Structure formats: C-alpha cells, structure tokens
Image (cartoon, rainbow, N blue to C red; front, side):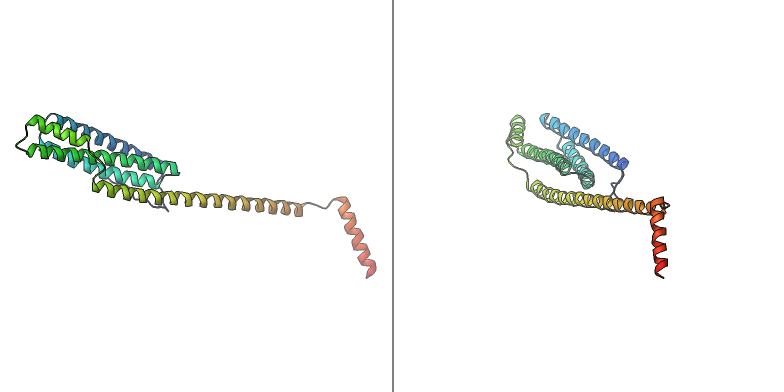
Length: 212
C-alpha cells in the first residue's frame, strides 16, 4: 500500500504509471474493507467480543479514509463524465458499507448491554435492526451531499478541459494550414521563371526602355 497519496495538480497531472499504481492501491483497500466487514458480521452472528468489533471498526474507518483520498485523486484525473460518475458510485458503495457495519456494531453493543434480554434475543434484535435500517445515518447523508457536489464540480472541470482541448486542436490545424500555404508560396518564389514568363518580362523591359 502506498504510504502517501499525491495531491491533484492541474499543471502537473499524474503519469499513467502513477495512476495505475493508485488504482491498484485502491483495489487492495476495497478488498480489505470487504474482508473486515464480513469478519464483523461473523463475529456478531457468533456473539463475539465487543472489543474485537471496535478494533475492526477502527481499521475499516482508517481504510475508508485512505479509499476516499485515493478515489478523490483518481476522480480528479478522470477523462469523461461517465468515468467520474462510475468512480463516485463506487466511492458511495464503500462509504455505505462501512456506515452499515458501524450501525450493526452499535446495535450489537446496545443489545449486549441490555441485561433483561437473553443472548439469543439480543442477537435477533441486532440482526433485525441491521436489516430493517432505513436511510443512511446523518454522517453518511453529509458525505453523500459532499460527494454529489464534488461530482458536479469534477464534471464541469472535465467539460471545460474537453472544450479547451477542442479549441487548441482547431487552432493547431489553422496554424498548420497557414504554414503549408506560406511554404508553398515561398517555394514558388524560389523557382526560376519559365521561358514564357521570361519572354514577357523581356518584352515589358523593352517597352519601358523605348518610353524612356
């Protein structure tokens, strides 16, 4: 895993090699998040230790922060609206996965602290709470709004970059056309006069000499 994530710089975009490395790091991070979330679910189902669950929760939140940094850097280097949208959807998927896991752990802690409930009913209550959860937590809602705003900004940046690239291409084509025309004109000027042109030139010079 990369120890540092480069910050987006429009004047110095990342090379394809660096982008590929970051994409690999993000894939590894996603796998780790998925694996730990499954471990949390298994631990809850087995009425496991709350301490172990809290350690796992800390790990996936740290991984989520890394995933968001990697995703933001890669989204900034996306070359199309479709790619921006695809990456945002993936980012939201893992955000929700971690928040759902955190909610399940919280429900499990509450159920375990309820002395009046049996272990079996506590686990059943936790599972029911996890399955019937409606809507994302407030923190997730805030993240969703931020990601949606960032997505809109990136789409505008991509559109502007594409427009500038088109204008630059058109200007380059215009300059190349002008250059070709100048080269042709210059070539014509360097060519010796044809016999007909030379005769006309001599005739013109003779007429002008008689006038003098």
